[in-house]
Image 1: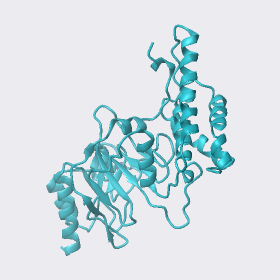
Image 2 (image 1 turned 180 degrees about the vertical axis):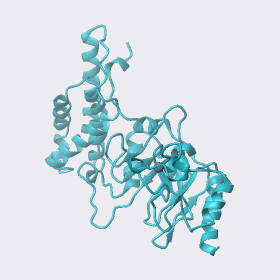
Image 3 (image 1 turned 90 degrees about the vertical axis):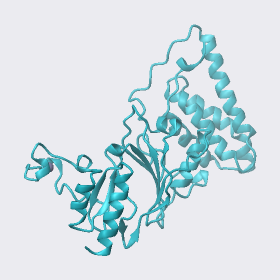
Image 4 (image 1 turned 135 degrees about the horizontal axis):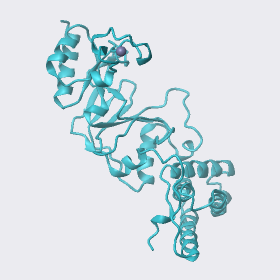
Length: 321
Ligand SMILES: [Zn+2]
């Protein structure tokens, strides 16, 4: 056994000793080595597919004997199947040369996945949960490990799509894996940079990663129209004040936060979108006059904030009676 193979075996055993389910990845690469066929082309000839196709997630193991047998044959890289390991891993990528943050993120001075993650925490009014088990990837990316919450089966998210957190931020849960430390890609190693045990996934993050309902929830009818109107007017006024009161340097961020708050009400069916847009645009008059941002940028930030808010719809049923 070469020393490279011995290192990988030791790394696989150490990972499994943490209770994390490992799977062999193609040597020098990031893709699972087994099975070598997709479910659609399974002929049941693979030993592990005799009782039906078995994918990499179900093959992942913590059994030291199976790991020794597998890793003594070839210098496999190591994958961690996040779902069976009880992990939710946030994958923060760096921008590649020529990669530019899309409209909606660029205005927030975002240049990489970590920026998006920190801004997401800030917007949620939470401390960024970065003091957790951390692995650095050869391309300078960061994997933040969390203990997945009990009772919710979180899958994967990719960038801005679905319940995704944003540009250059992927998350891996059930159906996903990450490359474990000790693995080597392009002659560079994945390295554990913070060995502490993973934090429990914060509730606000679990909420953000939970897919929004397909249809907006039906607003609960309140006893009087007056209370509903009063509440909406108050919510809009508070966000208008936030935008108008923002000081130099924080005006665009304030507009984003305000749009996100109103976006929750728009998504919940409580507030018409054009009403939210009109109010936010009017509140931006001072910022536009001082050149804090231009009109195009203003609309982009409003759109981006409304979109972020739509991930957590809020109905008037949540208003205290
Ligand atoms: Zn199969």
